[in-house]
Length: 198
Image (cartoon, rainbow, N blue to C red; front, side, top):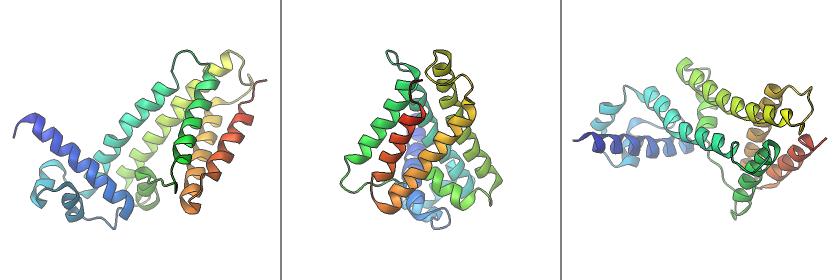
């Protein structure tokens, strides 16, 4: 198998396996379910992963590295002020879920956090690294907003970024439980007030 084919199969296993693990949970997903979802023999799994834990760690990186890059790009777009970038980013996400007849959200990192953050130190560390990178990206944009007086000069941008990120995750959970976009709309309204021009 050439290198490109190996990379493609590796990515296929990560993508399909993560989808299964997101829906069934870490403990509810075995290697058999992962390889069945990817349509490969069970023995192939161990050519790419040392264990199910190793699979989860690689899947986190596979899924969230590009998501963090998209988040960074959205909060760096030219032609908008920092405040506008943040509000536009979340407004577009809310609009995305609002277009769904029955809003659904399946979160791989949330599922892993709930089950494994305390049971597996490597998974817990990886989850924390990803969440912290997201906070730092938002905090940097908030600091830019602060420099041009869009938000108060006394604002702790790191703490505010933490709060916004946590509030968004909570709103997504409420949306998932209630199958309603309402919590996301409340989040967006409160974010607009929180970042209201002074």
